[in-house]
Image (cartoon, rainbow, N blue to C red; front, side, top):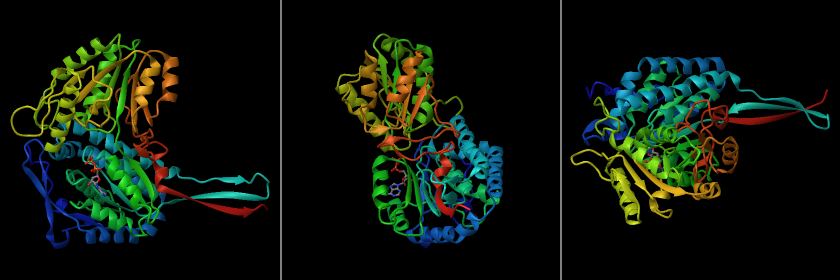
Length: 485
Ligand code: ADP
């Protein structure tokens, strides 16, 4: 029942200092259903002034929140976790409506995203410094861990909840306050989360959510403010670069989760059926709209045809349709621009000599849909091998030696995720060391895990989310020198 999960009027506003309010001048922007372009809701369109109000609230709450008991912070996160778990279905429906993914996938994201809250509810009580003797014995060195301070958290539209909880969870656990700017295409899930944190007992001002259609103006103003101490961003590499430049003025701490161009390597000794299973996950999770999505399939020449045919068979059987309809496997892409960009990459690859095994077009009719597509013998220099596809398209090309596979896998400015299918343990160890990626999946197409450090190298950014590393991004260290007794 579309509409059932849509929020009431309050959860379409700005959430500032523990309350809901309109944007300056009553401004709003529409949130659309990517399955048909219809308007789902009008959401408050925060101005720079509204964002500064949110930062004021975060700054005012910072000292008290930093002084709160770690156990209390952990228990608020745990309560939010329980509330979200109890409301999985309605959150999933809401996310599916605004983002397009199937309700089944959205439920998966609610469960996955929620685990960051559980994980960081447990990490909140494990923040600790150290006590050591200086090497010369003349002094003692004490380290004190402190929250970094008010944060700006900017999230993308592809995982409207998980990209938020993996920032909000550690920020709350560490004792930071925050202004969250959700993606303008999918703000409703984040506003629903704000209501849940409020209900879980998060004090006013700790979490503020300001949707806006003017992201650049907002980030510029907030980052020019010396009270803002940290920016965590998930999104495209060009915007990441812009934010890094912007941070120079006030030298904010940064976490940057940017684009990817994941290679998916299948060696001749691999279990090809397992590789196809892994490929379906690594490619089709979120319709391919994930920065960890397998972007380039590099397959040993001995198994390339078998792999491509089996993959095409599976891809060709997927049902494309509205994310809320039963039996649908693949929802719409986020907007028309996304469909055009994906189709352009496919046509370019075919022009460069690739063979279309299945798919290759958008279905007739309304909505931002694209048929799952497999391309074989894709030229190395084709644009599709260099750009993040962000759609349900699998370009397959062949290699002959391990050295060639590694070289080609590393020939990209990105370094987020890589996948390897092989049964050779020594090769696995070699590749884990040689691949210039922050994450390597071995014989699996699914690497995201709240207990693991998620993040990239090179143009994929820096910083880690999740794992023991995730909370470090929100902590500062003060070292205290003490004389030996
Ligand atoms: P995508 O291609 O996934 O839309 P973007 O990098 O454009 O990636 O967007 C990711 C997030 O960054 C969104 O919330 C968007 O509103 C925000 N954003 C885009 N430009 C800026 C900017 N100059 N400053 C701050 N946030 C921005």
